[in-house]
Length: 308
Image 1 (cartoon, one colour):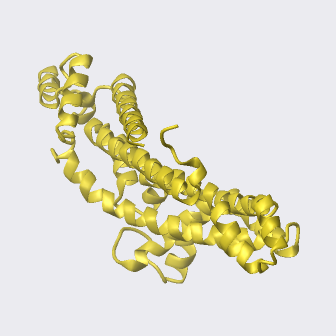
Image 2: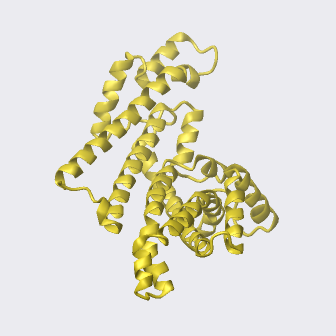
Image 3: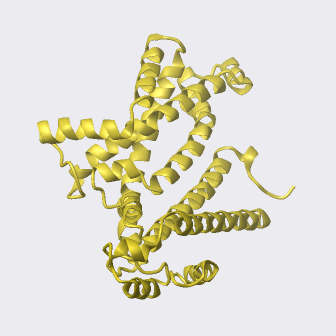
């Protein structure tokens, strides 16, 4: 077990290193010279040179990469090109907002998926099943940006029930969370429905029926534990995506999270801020997948990793 964990830990480090390396070189090879972007057109070349020296972009590319890796290992994510703000401080300030938004959205989406998916699976092709599948198709075909705008227009500007932008209190969560739940839930509902249908046809379910185990107990106890396995995996992937930043939602609602931080940094070619946001997103993603693997092993001992 310890060896398997160390192997998985090494894989996580390799994934994070690959992500930050790819982002580092893509930014520097495709987005132009930050020193020129930070200065007005016609700025003397001497000023441009001094700006490069201040930013550290005057060094050879491999030297910049080496300095970046050394600083990253030491916990120094650099300084923003805009305003000289420490990247670590900006990321730490934005991360809790994204964590709260993502956590609430995933919990509600999972609860909705379990409810609708299990109800639909009770009678496949029945009236309720068709209604649930119709909702899934409609929600899956609805773009997140369009839904967010419609929610703002109706509930914020027309009814004035909830604030339209920024994080000002508990009501600020309603519209962005609703957008994310409707966006995330279709694939979760489909997965739960299909998993329940397959699980209820398994041999151990038929054997339990032969022992006259009540149907509701079969469904809620025996079936739920197995049917929830694919949902756990999907939740881990979706939560990783949200922590990487639901960029569209955070941009529309001006949500002060990681997604908006990365988007603003992209607009201003702020390399250190982009790299810091992506690093945090990559670490969060691999950690969540590690947690999902552990939960999966608890729910189904057959998939536990250990010595053979």
